[in-house]
Amino acid sequence: MNGQNYEQEINLGKVFYRIFRDWRKIFVAALLVAVVVGAGNFAAKRIKTANPEYTRKAEENYMRELAAFQATGETLLREIANLEETRAEREGYNADSILMKINPYREYNASLQLYVATDYQIMPELTYQDIDLSNRILRSYITYMVNGDMYQYILEHLSEPVELRYLKEVLTIAPDYDNRMVTLNVREVDAQGCEEILALALEGILAKRPGIVAAIGEHELNTVNQAVYEAVNLELDEWQKANIQYVSELSIKLQEKGEEYVRWERSVEPQKEYTSVRIIKDSIKKFILAFLVGAVLAAAFIAFRYIMSDKLEDAGELKNRFGIRVIAQIPKVHKKRVWVGFDRLFARMGGLTLYERDALTLKRVAAQSVKAELKALAISSGMAGKITKEESVINGEGDVDMGQRVKEKVIAFTGNVAEREMKELLAEMKWENSYTIKCLPNILGNPSAVSEVMSADYVVLVEKQEESCYTQITRELEALFAWNKKVLGFIVIGVDAVA
Image (cartoon, rainbow, N blue to C red; front, side, top):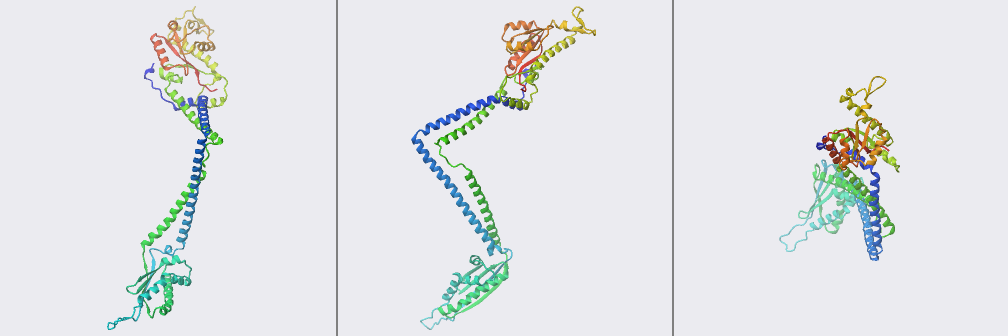
């Protein structure tokens, strides 16, 4: 017997089978928990709603939550509209802007300086000096350039239409009042574009000259340092990339806000908790949740009890634990039950091979197995050579029939099983008169059973699944081995089987 050194391994498949096998218990336990929680929630809320003060506060809280909920949706819609508008404007700008079309590694620039010259001279010998009108004239030209008249003139004469805001980006004016000069700078995608804009700007300025001469005075407008050149502008490259990246960021933000708005639409609008319909719905939710939690807890309890139990849960463990064979496993036959199809399904999932309908057949097979064991023991011990003629019966073929010899042997059936169940088992096993069978109570709790076992030749231990304990079986075997009794094996009754 190696039960003291045996360590039982946990079989997850068997654990899950035990959980599914007791699905009725799990259902009942979960239902009880659900009923208690659901009914308790319904009763508690009914008591609260009976209080007018509670109803008033609940109404105020509902109105605040509803207003906040609706405000959230409106805010999201405004943000989405703003983002869409900003993105559309930025995309339109990137598509039409001249700066976005310029190749930063081949940027064409044109510049022109205008110098205002008058016949003003300082007369040292005179106390009174004439007024210098140069700055007035220069300011008049600059005012014409920056107030939009020059830009409008250029727009009206350009070969291709351009918006004013895009023209102002490529045509800039830099006045120098100290030196009576003004510089015009143009950036374009090609040299022709630069020259066209610069020429139209100069044309518009010259067209303004007669009016300024008439209003202020005679002067000359000289053109100096006019040039067109090509350059690399890395700052423009970074600026263009930043504009494109900004559009991408707007698209991402717009998508995020759209998803957030969809989640808001799918979210549950605040509802009044004190209405009868609301209370019933909430109680049903609590009922369902409590049912699921109760089912999980009940399943966990069953699994824990199975793992930690000292009860005989699997007949196959007897052979592994004690090194003694299991003569037979007798299925437990249930009474007619509802939803037996689930039991059959779970039993097959659990790998069970026994069927309840074979219970009687297996009992008779167990009797024949015991007979075969006794005959094998008789032959192996040399008893056949010692049988006398009077004690033996010769069959027609001249072989020795061991029946008369075995007849004298006494087999004691004992174990952790009720005496009534033991007698029913032995009666259905159909023993012949050639064997002396004793049905004994448990030897650990009945003194009379000890003397009966001592007078028996062989012992068969009958144990019941989920009732017999490994601790008791160990003590039974220790006692029997101490009395030098031969244990033929185990018969386990009440074994799980397919319905």
